[in-house]
Image (cartoon, rainbow, N blue to C red; front, side, top):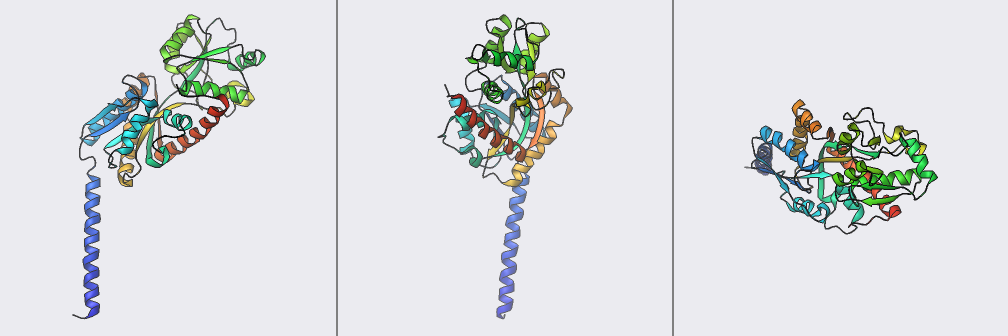
Length: 331
């Protein structure tokens, strides 16, 4: 056999081995998931994050023919749960139910043990929980423009309640203060339920909370919802205007929402991440999923992994500025 034939034989053998290995890898990855999948939630059971994970996980389990187990890993502002996903085998079998809390932590904690945007890859945004500003009925203002004018006329004299220090609700009000150049005293509560209850009872006059916690009190006449923080109006309360629609010039670009989506370790193969994204798109388009999500006080808001990543990065930058201006520190 001459040298040319030997080279051709070796090339054919190597090419065959390469194609076989690639085919084997493709078959292995197309079989995803090969075992039960974990969804790590950084909040306790019963909240919007846990609810989202369980509703979506149930339908993913049906689609994948594998159990999808929700695991609540709370502590350190959610960072313990994120660390668990960062350390997990990057094969798609461990997902993080991420939220707007993760960019908040990036802004609050300069020395995290992980890099959110290098160690994790966004897969898809799935739900949002709108926030809104509400006041007790004894407050005479009935819209955000008049309320803002009153705050400007009485700098530092008004107070507002939120669901806690360094929560999305706290940041949403601080962003409002910064953009509209206002001054007010923050009264943090431990949870939205307590903050809303005191606002409805008149112990505090103003509260920034999740929209679904405010609407029942508005229906009973115990609160007036002035505006919603999201970019667009909510299907849950289509008559409530957004901050952008308030007529306050400084708020024309205002937007702040609590959102939930999925992330995987950054070394996860791209085709597996793409499959998860595609399957999430399928699940979130199901009418019964939309109905259950709406019944839980949330809204379906599917966005691709790239879109989710861009949103989280922009949030982290904005939140850093708010932390600096408002002097917010974690408890």
